[in-house]
Amino acid sequence: MRTAAFKLHYFLLYAVVGAYLPYVPVFLGHDLKLPDSQIGWITGCYGLAVVLAPPVMAALADRKLPGRTLVAVGYLLSCAVLLAFAWAQGFAAALLLSAAFGLAYTPLTPLLDGLTFAEMARTRATGTTPPTYGALRVWGSLGFMAPAFVLFAVMYSGLASGRAAMLVGAAGALLAAVCARLLPRVPPEPRSAAVPTAAAWAELRRPPTFALIAPLVLLFASISVFYAFYPRLVVEVGIDPAWVGLVSNLGVLFELPWIFLAPAILRRASVRSLMLFGAACMTGRMALLAVVATPTTVLATQLLHGPVVLSLYLLPPMVLDHKARPDFRNSVQGLYAALCYGAARFVGSGAAGHAAEFGLQWAFALAAAFALAAALWLALAWRDPAVETALRGSR
Image (cartoon, rainbow, N blue to C red; front, side, top):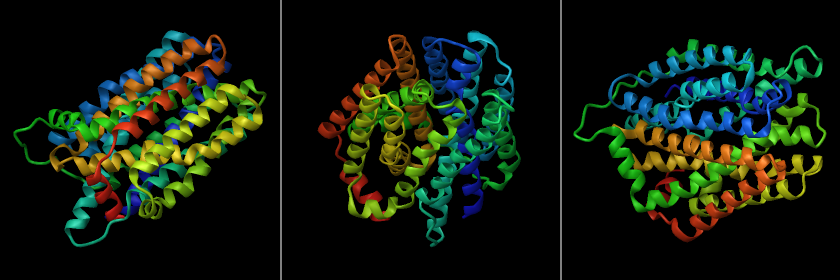
């Protein structure tokens, strides 16, 4: 297995969003002087675009084109959009470019996950043990942290503003496009009677899978509020905007042990208990930010980021890969991205933007309500013994 290539691409994939995600709310509010309601719709529009792009690109990977070709195209388009975003002026331009970035960038996560799981399956078929998904995905956490160190230096010294984040993201996307040939060329599976997207949708609607995906939509609506307004809250409590990326890195720093130790954790705890713990951490985190918005709370709640990442970003793709056949492996990841990275983000960010007009604490109160509803739904409805056996046994 091309382990080094996958590590590099997870690093670059998350470096791009690590430059964009923490800084775009500050860029919109601090540089462009846009109100919170417009910031909510701009970040939400990114999510609306995600509803469309990942299923289409994933279906192409299942039926028409090698995944690495689509990955290269996505990176090149992301680079072009971020370059344009760096010089955007006004609400309309930022709204359109946010949607364009969603269309270009977000298919990359399910496509790279699909390539990863396909290569892991091929490696197992040869009698070799591949690295775990967590051992590869942890490089994404490291990549997310990297841009903040560059951006802190140039912003704190006064050499650049939030626009520099878009340029750093564009540079990362261009480098990733150049490196796309390092990924394996996995051709589409032979055509079957089932349409990949339809087969993936049928799997998501089956009771055990639906009882997981529906609460995840609520959890992603909750975390979309965090991504849209946490940087704004950091600035509002008196922290200099130059520190936003490094403050965000605190959460990523605390997620690293959870991802590194995921195989050991899965040997000792069920998938269900980890999902419930992540949902509980999300609820507590958002509630604290709503009720006690101080610099200490803003920093301390980052301690809860690790279980949240495990339950939202590490375990669900593994569960879905277990559910998927090879002929719709990409499509099931693409539909998951459309629902959770897309529809949930659109609803969560848009609603929170209007709540934030009355005060940022109301946006985080809404996020806490989303997370609490998800935790209760998971506790009451989701049990999947087959997933427990597959994921815990394979670790």
